[in-house]
Length: 165
Image (cartoon, rainbow, N blue to C red; front, top):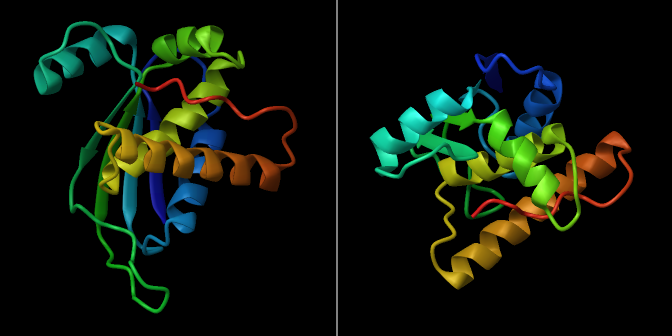
């Protein structure tokens, strides 16, 4: 799996954890090991520009996903996953910091960025949360991936509650 993490935000973030959880999420979703992903960490001004340009919404947001080859997880256990370019995930640590503070189970900026990375991966794979059933599926899968990764890493304490809207 080729995953690039590029921090352009000016904020120190745990890039290794972002890389690790992205790799874990893609493996768990059975994405071809030769697929490629880019994660870009930007400041609030850059995120706001992207949010306006692509969503026509004001203000910065927490995460944006830009799919490329529209890869999807295999539907059957014996199905070979396609190889390709997943796309880009853009994260904003300033928004992540506030969301971590405001979450029911307060957590750090880095924990929020890990959650948002998984959220972005799932969007790249075609998951959405516009409808209640879609939201339940996506957020359930997101929690299972974050919990699995945290358990594998030996991290204790409650996993971050979903704060993405």
